[in-house]
Image 1 (cartoon, helix red, strand yellow):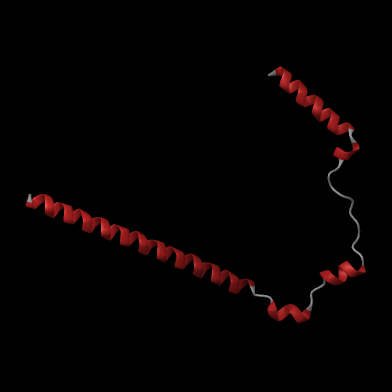
Image 2 (cartoon, rainbow, N blue to C red; image 1 turned 90 degrees about the vertical axis):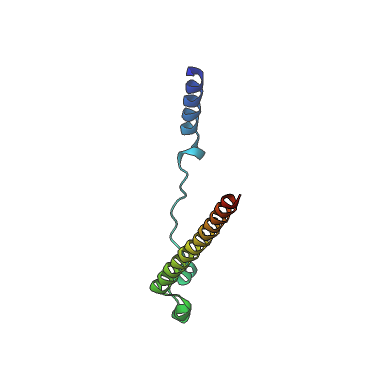
Length: 95
């Protein structure tokens, strides 16, 4: 166990000495005029953007619909199981 701890500490010290491992974050460069123009909001595209409230309502509706469908499927399985139990009880009662 001590051997592995010693090896990992050697690897970590080697990382710190290597300039490639010192900083993984790139230097910040100010965006140019073209990048700034691309990042600005375009009023022509405003009508194509969906509102957050509408998207939220659709998600809630989808979640409710999924819950109702799953509950219906579970209820159908329950009814089939109960019908099978009754059928088995009647066949055992006859014999």
